[in-house]
Image (cartoon, rainbow, N blue to C red; front, side):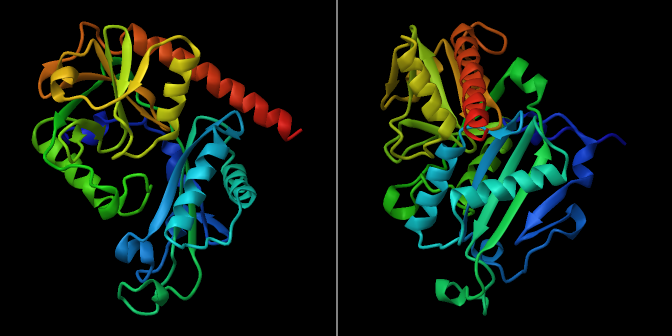
Length: 318
């Protein structure tokens, strides 16, 4: 009996299969161990409460693209929740470089770096019960975005789950507490789509459960205000590229009406860079199969920007 493909096989994080990932080594609290031995305590704050922060980084030709921007977000988040990792950005880079080297990985790789408040003395909420120092884990996998997804685009369904107000749980935190987004993803899957398009508390188009969302209308690129969504590194790079290359770009409130009538739509994220959107709520977006002309132009500009950043890092590191 053949297994039906899951929606995860056609999402913004869908990757080409790579058998080497079964034999990778993972960094866990100072040690680099085989995948089967990479474990944390059931008392860990991240497992028990979702109390931690993470970053997704991409490795290109031995360098972590836009490393400084990722570290700025990570350490801002850690400080905001009073989580002392005991690390510096340089220390994080050393962990990532050593883990990549242990796996013989130099490019086409994705890292999930996770820092939690660590093991708790008792299975309760209070942060002061995390008395044993932070837990630090780095998973680096061979990972290339699915060509099928990039070619065909993904299907979004608008979901009832919204990204909340900053005083409930600020969406700018890249936290382990992802239940809000998991619920949105489930709602989209149950509606027959690949991912969920989430609105903000005022009903304006905001983000998806996994990525930042853009539309193209009449030659302009639009995205949300950023008040209620993860302010992604790739999102900001796309905005900057548009401004630098004479492409009108707006961070604004807009409704599903404008999204349905868009000429193109795409998602941004560290893993997939720019992923085309084929339809929203069963409505085809634009007339193109896969990425439209504006998405392709932005994708090319972004690829050049990554190459420039990698070259700059190599030069700085001698």
